[in-house]
Length: 68
Image (cartoon, rainbow, N blue to C red; front, top):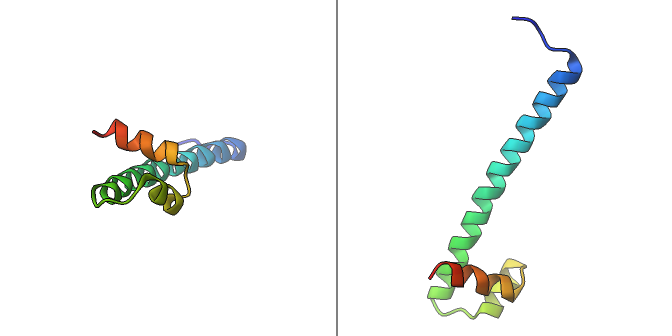
């Protein structure tokens, strides 16, 4: 197998790194969504959840509304 020039190896490595970052981001987003829904189910207010998550209360409300 022919070896790629170093520039193309760098491009391939950066692309793979970006793909891993996307996968981690997707997993973290899903974990946050589930945690928000669980907190809401136990009676926590939207504003308290938003403060704990570091996101707007409007976004928390949107997540809850999308999952009804």
